Amino acid sequence: MSDGERLEWLPVLSEVRELCLEALASGDSERALVAIQANPVVAFACISTAGRAGVRPESLRAALEGCGQAALSRAIAQQPTFSLGTIGRLQSISLAQRHHGRATARLGAVIAEALGLACERREALATACVLHDFGRALMMARSGADAYEHCTPERRVQLESEAHRYDHAQLGGLVLRRVGAGPGLCQAVADHHAEEPEGLAAIVSMADMCVHLEQGRPVRMEAIHRRAEDIGLGYSALALLLAGGFQGPSGAMPTPTISPLSGREQLALEAAAQGRSYAELGREHGLAATTVPAHARSAYAKVGAATREEAVVAASRLGLISTQTGER
Image (cartoon, rainbow, N blue to C red; front, side):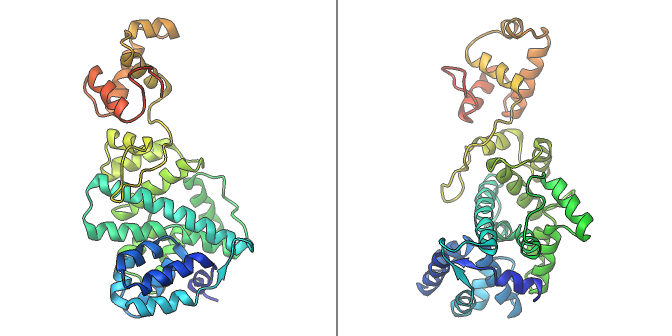
């Protein structure tokens, strides 16, 4: 069985398959795309069907428009299913892919909104986010376990490359190319763990790392800051993203995760919000007279402010402090 066939025959939750088929039968393309995008296994089947028909889709919308409702319905109808009462190893992999793919697509949409991406780019980004990690699902289907579950993304890629001579992102991109997906989609998936990803791959990487934070999985904050800089997401926009203050096109809001501020930067902004002097804060915490203002200036930059007053307003709006209590 080829890698593509392994992925196509991962089981799908029966309710999810029926939802996709009903949405396609309704003739409402937007409803159908939302349903398909909710499951990476179904999404891969649709991209694969379109690719083999010569469409070379860059997005699920391109697959639907290029193949039509009937062809995608036939492909989805062939997917094996399972119920929540019969969960084994492959079923667990499928569910994990569904949850992670949906979460990454949600944050990808939030980032796309912040960056002002054009509609066509957003469609391609959404599909890449949904499918970005299915190379990992394939590795798990082969081996029966995720040996790198507790590693940072960088460490996972290193260990996978040492073991297989490629990482799960590269494997995902390779399989997509083999089934005829568009080159942009293949590259966005294959390169999202590259040292210096470009274009959509960099945004997928950013969304993926933010989801790792939300899920309490290991990720380095310096890697997030570096990727935000790569895609043009400034400090204040990043703070808003991590604090859950950005809304995507559908109004979906990310779950609050962590503050981008260090502990001392947080103290400096809380003191400013309470009207306390930095000298007072320094005495209270045993800090040198020059230390607190330095942390304050760093905090100002992170929330996109130039003055003490602007920083208090911005940090309060981001949900990092309260102007009344000084507490998050």
